[in-house]
Length: 413
Ligand code: SF4
Figure 1 (cartoon, rainbow, N blue to C red):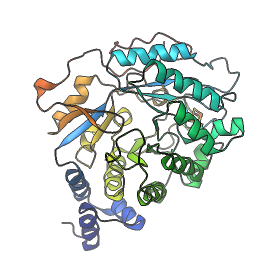
Figure 2: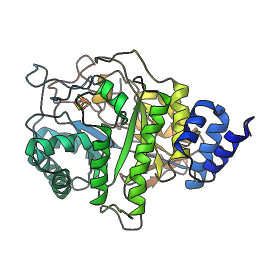
Figure 3: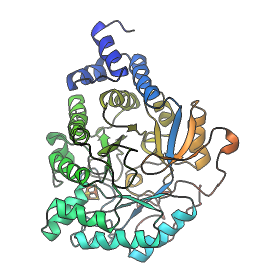
Figure 4: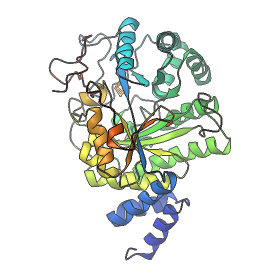
């Protein structure tokens, strides 16, 4: 109970699974007492996942190119076309990295890259079909709506055609990347050349309609207002309402396993190094945790909420498990994009599992669609492969990045 009956009533409704309005979400975000907010969000998590399981994933983010024409101000990863530090990896190198990932138990790859001026739909068809042919066991959860808009533009085809073709080539799921801030004002301020938030959502809606589910993200801390943060999740919830109303399913999983559309929401905090935006702003830890809790209460139609320990650190990642989070994302065998901008947090598999177990939850490895692959009910059941470590080969880190082909995946130093 709080001292404010209006806040009490909204928290109770949200905790019980009722819908809260954007105005109510903003009130909770700005005024609800921290503990009461976290408690209500955790009640949602407990109702949805009474088994106390918190999931994680083993995957590898593989970048095919850092060449990009879009020049987002917050991005430390891209290089303009013809820049001497620009690179593109051949398919053989991408396959080699996929092979390393499979050896380490990865079940998913996230293929991500810049908006290369020459890469149309056929480039992605070749890329996805090559990966699928070599490693059919790997789920390709990759690219985002802005890459799809870019490839469609390069080839002069519709979004629908691009989605249908890359799905047929092997794309299993669309990453929530490139959402950043969807409302117009903050989006234009940080990514003036990127397509609008409405277009981002349009691509997702087309994909959902065609049996491809996805995730949704949000980058906090580039100068957006609290109201714009709530507007961002309101826009996503509206598209998910469509997926639910139309009964969209994911073609990759058995019919009754999951509703299609957005499987998870993943807010993360902006990293201020090596880019044009730099450190003028940034979300605080409390802002992040409060937003996590509000998101859990607000998204009555999205199954999973993922913490971003990569950007917030492991301590905050663990705290978020008490604010409604049910998934700690991935160990990330390789990550270059966010680490280029300053994210330095890393973990080995044992560390990630320990974050879950010491929060009094049961760790479970999941696949892309949140199906449990291995539930570690006791410490004796924990995996012991010490080679499974997150590794950053950032262009911001000396000795890493551009043009480098051999990544010391097992180097935890
Ligand atoms: S965030 Fe993506 S689209 Fe924007 S500059 Fe970086 S690579 Fe390009």
